[in-house]
Image: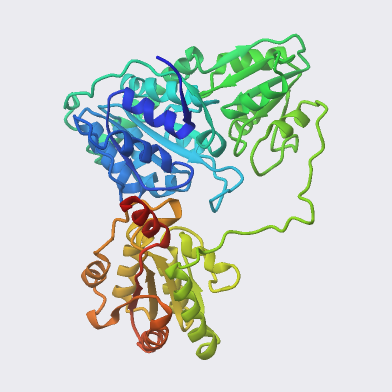
Length: 531
């Protein structure tokens, strides 16, 4: 077939479709969002149908995908790296249950924290769970690994973790497709108790998983994604993982002078690693993210040989790998790093003009700063996190999805008053509902503002799981109906909002205020589309 120009995310999506995908399960999160969006657009009228509706969070996505695999069909789960923390319970256990239909979990890591709270490396999750992993170096490999990854999953009887990074997910290259395959028929495991993790069964399944590990290593040693490329200069041997191989080749367009072990499939191929160690004086590990491979080499493979990388300062300890940092690590002449000219003013992101969050923060600040000098505001992950910056300086915390409500509860338990939580509608249904239940059960003295813009705005306006249901959810959890207050955040309602906030702060219990106005961006897109 002719090549298509695709983002790394789009290459993964197209490969899954070509491999006979029956369902994709995901919660929006940069840099993984475009995978699901591509599948949604490509399959809007597909027959047979392919499931592609957004999930409430990554945990529900992982569990639903495992359920599809249970029925023998191929499923894809997509999330950003911090979403792995939410999905971890099912993810780790899925290695013990195993799979029936092929199951690929895509973790899109964000070295450099372009849109994230940390730089965690999802390869540690795959290693911890003892499952096979794939890490592409370019868009074609992203396609090929996904297309063949479902067969690898079914061959091993295990989920496969596919790890990509921001630069690969959001850059384009020509991709050649494979022959499309039909969807699997519904079928079930030969062992009817495979997915029942009672301790007696789980112990047997775990021993089976341990017995598979040697076979996983052999598959890595035979994998086309793990290549030993010899070089004449044995002073240095290079282990290049994923996109790190691309950065190395940018510095050696005519071939590297040093032996290179290109890594794209895990667990690590021991035979090739031992050859590199035996032939070379030192080892340099190029990996985008944390020192996952470097630690393993220092731990049990590299007795008596120097291993360089992020841990010893040959590469920066944080941030993205780049062609320039790789050049310096291999001792090549490198152009100097240029700083931003002082005439260019750095402009941090800001809330959109016309955003309902602006009116909410303006009103909240006015009330709290005038009447409650000891106030604390706990916020969450979403557009409204920008309330931390100028001109609002309105929030005191932002840690993880849903933490606003539970941190406000903990602060209230410690005696802080008023303890105010600000959370968005999508984040509330993702991870805030259980925190609200804790508040209700404890009778916590907290005021919770669910700033509802009726979409998942931060990642591009995807559907929000709670649209039209927020009041009912709060009432069902146990918040008194008279303390579930809804207001339209507009300047004309400024005084009403102020009065509402004061009244609910003074109420000695759990109260919820819902400022609701559609996201200005999604509203603009709707109007443009209607024209």
